Length: 213
Ligand code: SF4
Image 1 (tube, protein in one colour):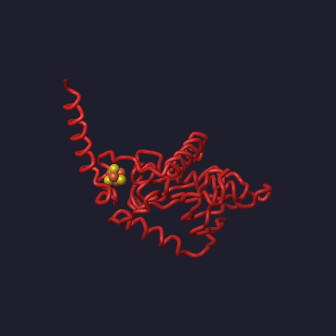
Image 2 (tube, protein in one colour):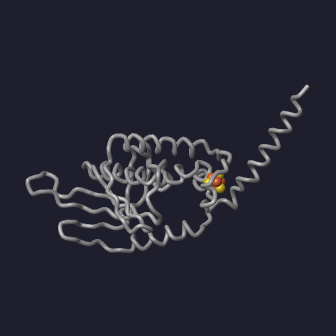
């Protein structure tokens, strides 16, 4: 269990999946710059959070709901939490169903699903109720994708939260690893992955030369 003073932003899980160095630059060194992708994402989230509580048939909708988990050591906000009415005979009257908004389209990895699952784990801890499913809404495709929050995804989410705490607690920023992702990174100018990679290869070369008999 983490203490209240030791909680990290839930959104940092996305940064961790995208790039460990980016995650440390933002959450250890407190650096941030915006590019087109982050600006579009921010505007989309702000719009959703400005909405008011609503009822849609048998679904109650909460926007920008605060979340916290002492087990994961995370704090944040859910874009949307729908509360689905459960049948009358059940002891549970409303079951939470988190919906996370993303500006782009579905990705090949689990990073969006992990963020959604972390929200569900927060809701389970806060409300003492199981949250078996949620959804991701993608702005580019305008489609909603239902996600089953199974054991595999839950384990992956818990492991990611642990890795995040280890990285931030270490206080160290990993070296850059230049890759296609860097083109989409808002911190590229501050990170300078190509320069650092070039310097490292020069240093490696000089060390090899010096070691030669
Ligand atoms: S520029 Fe590349 S290596 Fe640097 S933080 Fe961004 S994604 Fe990571």
